[in-house]
Image 1 (cartoon, rainbow, N blue to C red):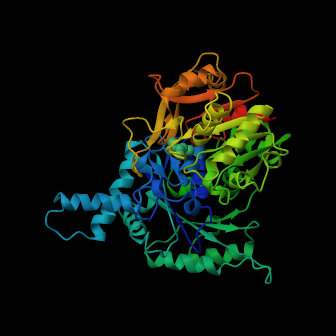
Image 2: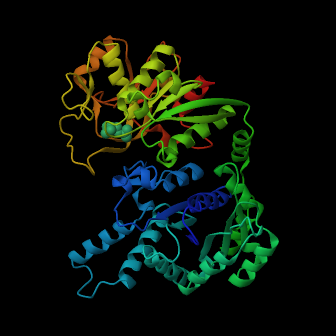
Image 3: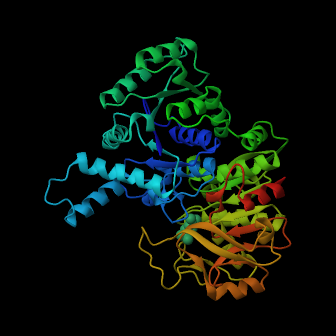
Length: 528
Ligand code: GLN
């Protein structure tokens, strides 16, 4: 088993997650089984309780783990399903060490960062690789070199190289090479300094990936090579490109795939990236174009809808269409600042995504009504599905004042409710992770998925109340997918509408460039 450790220098937000995914892609496309691991230094056990405004989307894995959105990039680039073990956090590591200490497993010694914490980290990493029968484990260290939060983790990676042998562990350091407009040249000093910091921790990087706006010039490349003890061929340009899916090609242009294979003693093989290339070309040179509105209260931070945006890019690539996004802040609609007509003007379709709390919901309901009445494609995801049920209950089924009890606990018609047996404490009480659903024969969703038994990921607390299913169906709403026992409503649709589909699940968590999420693919098709 080989290990690649990716660290970051100079500043955060360099796109280390994309680099890690892309490096993984270069090896995966050479036939190696690559398993990614992301270490997050925060003391939260998982990302479930974090604010998407600050931290970006909470991504959900099959096993229900709520994690960093980088895991989404790994899955999308590498076509794999990850689990809790792929995202150790400071919180998870310390939880492990402290519970062992309480059980008396350290036999009376004083528990220390070295060897106990670093030891658990190394065990963790090796186990992830062994369990998955990985050829290569690629470990992204969150944060920047020099942070207290990740220092013990980086030390564990140094020890890992010592124990596994230099030929089995490679370090990639991702840094920034800025170009100051006044000077007009790329500067290598920040990179030199951040490599010095890494050297101070006992780690000589094998590759330096330089994030820059334009391709890395020769002069800074030579300087970085000379001052950082890395051959010029291992100083790699990671310049800006128009889509993240092009990054593997940018790195491949510098021969990173072959160089890494050689460095780790892997057989040097040609990559097979033809399908990937075709989709990247479609993204860069689309034939068609649509505009999709996305409603929500986190519109200030696009990262909080990262997977939806990727799902649209993937679906668009397969239709050779650019998908422009128009953000609609629905609080403005309910405050009367913006009319629905203006908000949805020029839009080919609308997505009402997941969400929590009551802010902006009346505006979302108005948008859904507008789509239903004007035959505009609508895709409702989780909260969007629930709001579509509320809208239909109120405006078609005649249940005036219908609502979700999350929004209005006193509603006369609680069409969306917490079902008996579910509790309402925050944290750890949600229906999380992959669940099966059975789709109605001949329905739009069954057609979209091409099968009747499917699995999608979930992250919610509320459900369609069984007390109202009959009434809603009688009024024409079709629940076209349910949990296998038929008790939970998973999909809805309106058969006569151009495209009016909602799902309690989050299909955006399972989309790949090479295989788009079926509902998004059909939705983009309907918009076109
Ligand atoms: N707030 C809703 C619930 O808890 C929807 C959650 C979501 O959209 N992820 O059921």
